Image (cartoon, rainbow, N blue to C red; front, top):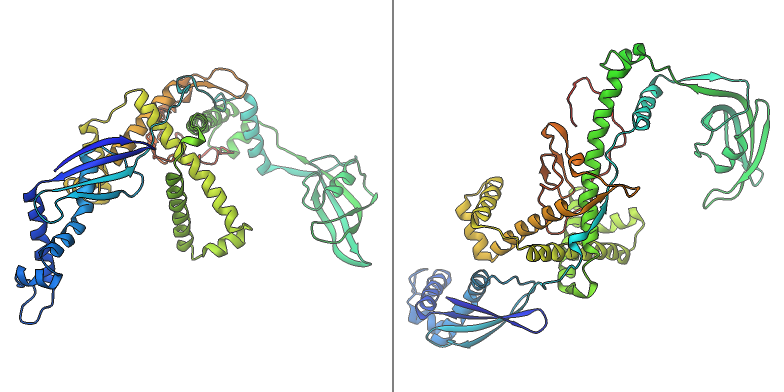
Length: 481
């Protein structure tokens, strides 16, 4: 088979494909054998139907050849895509130019391909990440969270302040009837769990005072409240001493505890910075891709895939899409709009990374491709040769190579963007590496040895993980989770 590619207008390529006569004959023979096994003709056993009889049943030799070519054309086209290194994004328009009746086969395939976009300025991207530096305030906050476990409420003889706990009798009426009531109700001033008006009234209130106010809960009538303040309590935290540290952690001294917390907070901050580096770098890259350069067919396919994935996840939870929409209070058009926004971003990331790979001359060697196929085959429990054959047969080998090129492009960007913190100060890359070779999961679901530039990434990327808000000492030192 010979295949040549010629660019035409509008991000399309015309593949000119020629299949030699002996290869067409082989396809025709295969079709005869298949039809012979399937045909049920009186007087003949399955698989023993003569070719002349099959041709007669099909409407003649030309009809049999046409059926064989119809079955073979997708395979011929897929192989041509691999041989010509074309990256189609839509179904082709196929036109047989010769060989329909005999001899070698020639056909053209007009197909839309992924556009090559430009991303001017990618070499000078500036990315903001949270500072990985650990401050005394960070450690103090973690210490205070530990102290909360031993906090005591102590009655005080003063007006209530934010953070105090007050014992109150609270009653509310609407339309002359009591709609809520609670005696000896312990309430944290400033928590906002009842009504904002209650917190405002309690600020500065003293024991014995009767407070009156009105509040209108959302979707409900106005309620008139009367509140009797019966007691004000201050929350006392234990002193930070070596004795307290020994009772509440595996450390004997406060200094040891603080050092452990500083180490753990540092690791969390590094992971958060790594995730932000990846996500914000991709966001900066997305901004360089013009909307006009994004093919609608890619966006539509991405939306369909995301909708399919969502439906599959809901099925696993025994929920329908309609139930999901009802539970989240969203209309179908609203959900589709959200998915479309995500899809456009994913396509821009895909195009942007390919553009960086082209601009930097990043290539994937045959050895790297083979290694990727072998790793994937091992995960799937397949033989590498079998998987490679299937990829080639389906015309997907180029897609695997493209994913590897995009991973290299992402790594290149992560290694070259300018890093600054929220205040605009420089952040050193060595500060974004986790000590002791700790593996942390990146926003794309891959892992690296604590190196923000070492992970690979899928075409569309994904959202970063939620940041860790607390760090608690464990009984096992050196636990990096």
